[in-house]
Image 1 (cartoon, rainbow, N blue to C red):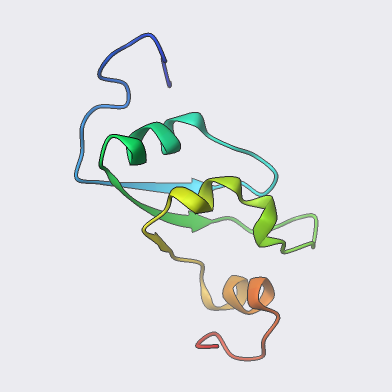
Image 2 (image 1 turned 90 degrees about the horizontal axis):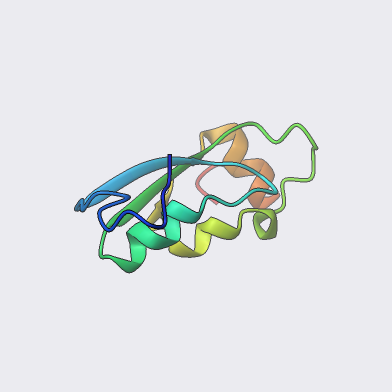
Length: 83
């Protein structure tokens, strides 16, 4: 678990992988990015059906966002995952 009092939490890393939660934030992501880690993020299915990128506040700290094709189309409101 994230411990803001621990100087090495999260531990130093060149890269981290996380799963973003719509409507939620994980403090360790911003901390790791601030310390130089490159963050690669996946996302789970949005059960709310909103598919709102603004509901993913930790996305701002991510090097890459890696949703699957169906999730990508819903977040971008397109008919093609490449779009």
